[in-house]
Length: 386
Image (cartoon, rainbow, N blue to C red; front, top):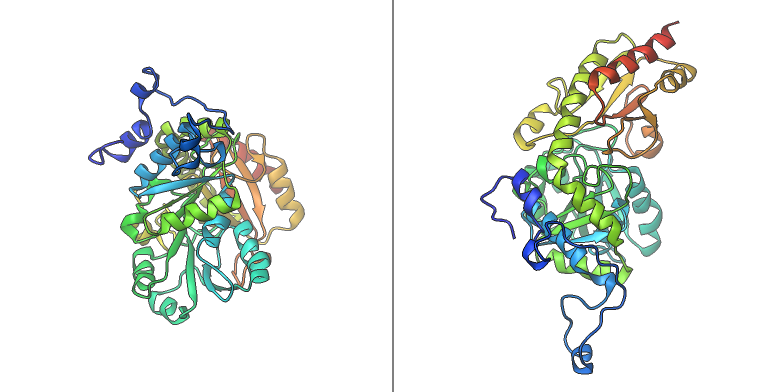
């Protein structure tokens, strides 16, 4: 266990490690296991022990779960097979037939699809609210049957920030649990306990993994919610493979270095984009011109390298040409890896409210030199000016 007197950067390097339990080896070993043997039939038939079956936990998974819980300052965590699995598992831990669930309109698209297409089959009513909802507005939406409020801050693609302390206080006064997707900021950038959030989900696929080579999610919570989440994960058979767990644990140790580099490079690129005549708006919470920048300054201790920019009235063939002309930016989903990515977003096809924005382009900044990335963008913009 790591002493909380240390800063988070130190804790993420040290948490979950116990070299003296592993012959002095710093990194926890990788246990490939399904069967875990017992020394007697009495032990086998007795009370559950720390390790009973590979799916429910090994020293490999425990080391990462402990590290992530300590980093968030919460009681425990549960690993899942993906970030989406963290959302679905945590949600199912709280809802049942007849329940009402509130969710921000700008949550992750795949998570939203689960809420709109799967939960209604089980008799759960889902209601979306505007990302910049006020505490007073949220209070009016809460019903006696409201079982969970799902936040994501910043919002997916449109990057709105919630006033989390105020919204969480409303939920707590109504005794409604809150869940936050904190994949963008990670535990380094946002103190979810301080914000009053009950359950945190994060796609470790992104910044924690950091190399675009694993799929994993995590649910972090305090009691009594942790037991509910653990039970649901057990019932659904949620688990992560030992090799992916090892890669995520290794990625965690350098998270602060990679996240800071990505953030700083993204601000440099965002500034250049803001100066281009074809760009209407750059949407990055860490920029002073972001509508919610005051919330960012108040609540966030750091940001990330993922942001969007809006184009002015460009025909689709120009957008295609712009993106296709790039050499260093890969065209693809996900983010948080070492390589920079770009993709066009289609948000109004997946939202309940109208968003008066032009074509949105999402940029995920990797570890390349930002000057090279700007030069790549220059060539692409020149291509559509010809």
